[in-house]
Length: 117
Length: 278
Image (cartoon, rainbow over all chains, first blue to last red; front, side):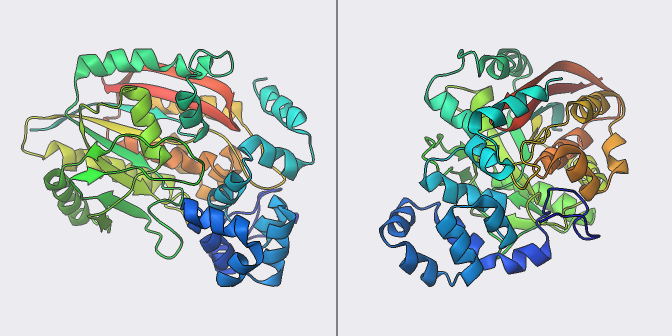
């Protein structure tokens, strides 16, 4: 997912635009539903059924199954909605950052600290 | 007539809510961030606002991608927080002022800002946490008007457009016939990126330039496209558009009353400024 096309000029970054919004609509809609505690519970109780209810495509279903953020973004996921999915598992933004950058959480935290210069 | 007594701009990441709930204000990790706020509270006690107009971006509480307004203004007499999915304790509800909201809406639409108006609206952490940082007892002494900017789904409004919205908002506020004191808040940023291989991106050099521009060169960031702002400040750093609106409500010449900058909380470089008309 190297993003250096004219539409996506920032390396390592997928700008959430109309194309992503269309691609990821079902996935993001499911994640948006996780604002509601009853929906979070329903997802945990029956993940397959819950994903089917929102009409996730095979790529989105696989990315959800893998709890893989880069795959979720590739499938059209938006960070703000995906954060609600991550919340179900008690993952914070540094867990998410570590996963996407292939670092341990401690290494990721060190990377953030290094930005102090 | 109403008067804008100043602007507060601050970061708004959800983890702040967790830290408040756990009482971590003096924890070594959090202290450099929270220590920025006592001075803000002293300033607020001095300027005694009646109203806060708070400019922020919704993160998927009130708005979803089914309807994504570029600019939206709350027009309710009360606003509540709600579960955003993470179990952060919800804040006390906020008292609105629908009469003032409609005054602002009338004025802004007359100036060609084609707004979405919201007579019912939940407000998320980007609204509630900055308020809770300013008034930790959550006994809000002000009425509020929420102004929402789309920083979620490209195309985003340009920094220039956001700055102009702020300028129009100032004219709208200052034509409100009641003798009231208004603080404008802009929340979000500063540089951070939650998503992609570039997650964890922070750009201290850019943040410092941006914060300096808020004082001396308010239109500085308008030379960048929103894509360039993403490149410079991260996919969520672009929330600085909310700061541009707030800055636009002040005259060109301002006095910096206070500022703080700290890396990091959560994944974010945090900035805080209090600006007054010079």
